[in-house]
Image (tube, rainbow, N blue to C red; front, side, top):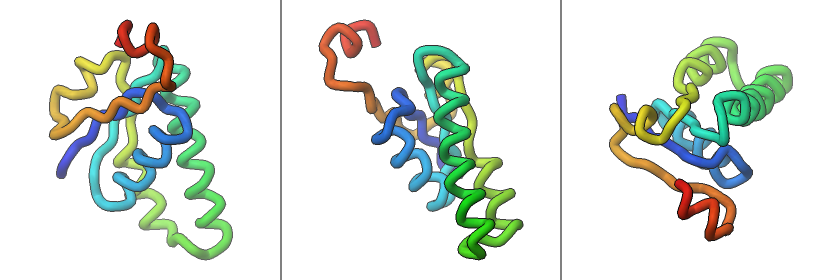
Amino acid sequence: MRSLAIVGPGVLGLSLARHAAERGMTVRLVGRDRAHAENGLQKIVTSWKRRLNEGRLNLDAFRLLTTRLGTSDTPKEAIQDAFALVEALPEELQLKQTF
């Protein structure tokens, strides 16, 4: 299975992560810290739960999708098995230079 690392669990990063997981990729999110990344991951899971409750996603698919998401503490850790790294940080020069 292909793996994608995404740095920046904001709107863009989470949209990319959700889309990639729904297309069969394993995704690792990296945020300011693990809690930041976990919070982003929970937003994706919440959207899938909503679809599950609406009957637009079955339980087996929901369970499979949730196995495709994870977090990492650092970009270096996230890219170990990744075929690509996506930088989805806010357009702040200092933040990008730190990355």
